[in-house]
Image 1 (cartoon, rainbow, N blue to C red):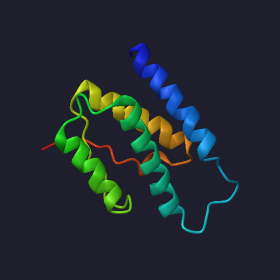
Image 2: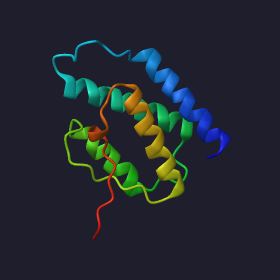
Image 3: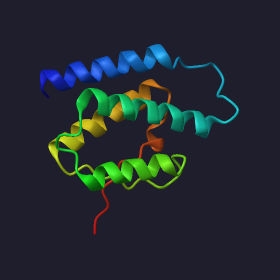
Amino acid sequence: MTSTFVSFALGALLALSATAPLQAQAPENWPQVKCERWRGAYDEALKRFGKKGLGDEFLARNEAFMASGCQTPPDVCPRTAEELNFANVMVMAGMNAGIASTFMPYACRKS
């Protein structure tokens, strides 16, 4: 991992934990709250990390996942090193926001 990636990951986690504290009880519309937290982390990751190395399909599938209210089955497959780094940052940010690993949109299916 590069120092830029590690710095970004730590910054993203700290920023997310400062803006989205975990609550003792899940909110009434927990799926919507999780999706909003995911969108916030995604936007922040793009802002800090940029789109370099992220393919159109990777970005489109991430956007489709969020447009569905984060309800579609996982189908975002990271194919480049940059996409994998981005996905790893998002998983860490999601877990830090109290979003379970089963929520994540990342999966690579065998054809």
